[in-house]
Image (cartoon, rainbow, N blue to C red; front, side, top):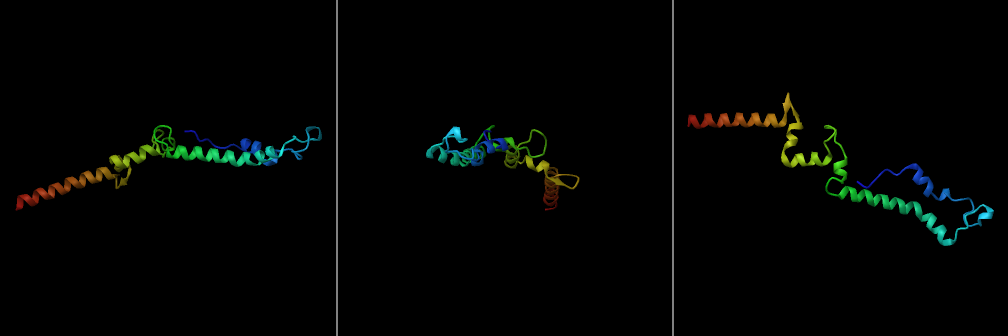
Length: 128
């Protein structure tokens, strides 16, 4: 995953407020001697940085594989269970084991229900 939290220090360094009070003044007068182009770049620095970091986040969200956001987010079902694992469980049916029903889970309930239905069908066939 490429995206990281933007720190307060990074923001402070890139803010227009971090420029000297007289950025276009010569250095001997407390400025930085910025040209008009350098002043424009200073104003663009933070927004461009934020756009870059936002694009990294979008790339991470849409990424596949172990470097994706879905693999980095843990869902609270144990240290190793990621959002990607959780999503995959829906496709495989494994999610049923994590849905509580009565004293057990949905997988156990459905298995017992299937047995009950099969027994009923057998009795109906015997009586016919």
